[in-house]
Each structure stands twice: as structure tokens, then as C-alpha cells.
Image 1 (cartoon, one colour):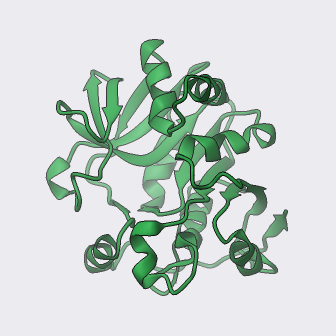
Image 2: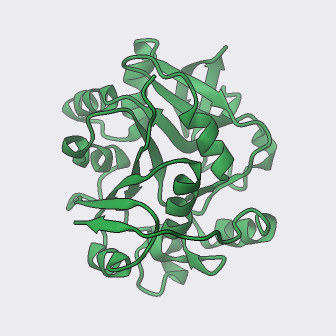
Length: 252
């Protein structure tokens, strides 16, 4: 299997639920342990082996562009604009379709994770047309279960996904290893009037092409609200210490 070194980060949303502490910043630039969330995500992807990053931006994207300008993050960065950032996240993923023609890692700008989790996912065996989702079976440790996207598995196959499903045995960590087939499934979902990532994943479920990778005890957090951010600050203190950063090249 060809090595995956490209990553897509979704960073376009307007972050309504965290706006009270954002001070006018887009959510990816909100501080977590001394640096913007987005910087944590890029750093951890780089540490896992990613050297080429595509970021979909939207809400107040000019601030993200200015923050990236001249900054050394150790990876090549391409920015893609999503003027429809108020739409569900499947639209943001589709905006990157012309930039990505090979297998890729898909991440969220507000999901913090250990580099080892991303490394585990990148080393998974991805078959043609598949998507693999890193899932957390430790349901009791999630901060906001009502807001979490739930997953139901049958072996390593995912058979249902969504925030509202009542039968589930793991949680969606927001980390995916994807084949470009994901874009076709998202496009089909949009044509049907549905445009979230989960809608695209349900197309893959129907085809038996959506698999789960258990992250075990590895840590991750969705920083979607001020309360979630405070919770993560309290439990993730030792996981996100800075490492040396190499030269980066930004392409916009």
C-alpha cells in the first residue's frame, strides 16, 4: 500500500458554540494550552508522518491566512476556501476534491489527539474505495455524550453512525483514513439533499466499505464548547508539549 503523507483538515465552521470565549477569532485559532487549536492539529499530523496539508477555511478565513503567513509549521500547506461554511461539514470536505486524488488522512481543526493515534491510522491497511474511522470504545470518558457522534460496529465494520442513534458501542474521534471515493459518496449525499460527513459515511456503510479502528486508551478531545475546552485543559496537560518545528511552505 502506498504511504499516505497528505492530510485534509476541516477548519471552515463559524464555531457558534465557542464564540463566547473566541474574542472574534475563528474557532481554529482559539487558544488551547498556549497555541491555536489548528496549530496543535498540524503539529500532531506532522509528528505522525504527514508533510502535505490541505486546510478548508471559511468563517473569517482572512485571519487564518494571516496567522499562517510566514509561519514555520514543518509541512506544506494549501488553503481551500469554502464560502458555504454555514453548511454541514460534508460541503467543506467536497471543496477539497480537486486538491486530493490519493488516499489521505481527514482531521477536524477542533479535535485534539495524540500523534500515535494518527500514526496507527496511517499504518492501517486501506482497501480500494474504503474509509477507516478511528473510534473510541471508552464511552464513559466522553465529556459531552449528547453532542458526540456515535458508532455501531459489527466486528471491524461500521454499520451505523450519527449523533442521534440509540444503539452504539464506540464514538467517532473525527479522524479518518480515506480513499478519494469519499468525495463521490459525499457528492451523492449532497444530490440527495444531505451534506454532512456522516451522510457520506452512510453511503459507504451500505456498500460495506466503512471500517473502524479501535484507538484503545489513547486520548483525544473535541473542543467544541468553552466547557469542553476547560475539561481538556484539565486532563490533557502532558499530552501536547511542544516539539521542534521545521521549515514550512504555505501555498494559498
